[in-house]
Length: 93
Image (cartoon, rainbow, N blue to C red; front, side, top):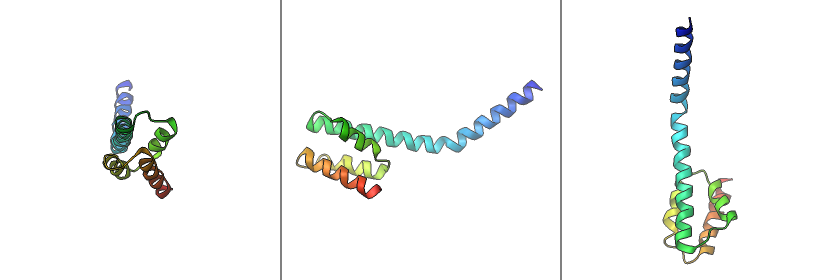
C-alpha cells in the first residue's frame, strides 16, 4: 500500500513538472535577459540606479528585452536608453 501511494505521488510530481517545465524555462530566460541587460547598461554607462533596474525587471517580453539589449550599443547616452525602456513599458501595459 505504501509503495502504491509513493508511485502515485511520484507520478503526480512528474506530471506537475512536465506541465510547468516550459513556463519555468521561459521565466528563466526572461530573468537572465533582464540581468544581462542591466549588466550591459552598467558596462556602457556606469552605475545602474535601482529605479532603472526595477523598470528593466518589470519587462516580461523576451523580444522587448532582446531589442533593448541590441539598442544599448547604438544609443548616444543613458537618457536615450531610459526613454526606450519607458517606451517598452508603456507599450506592454
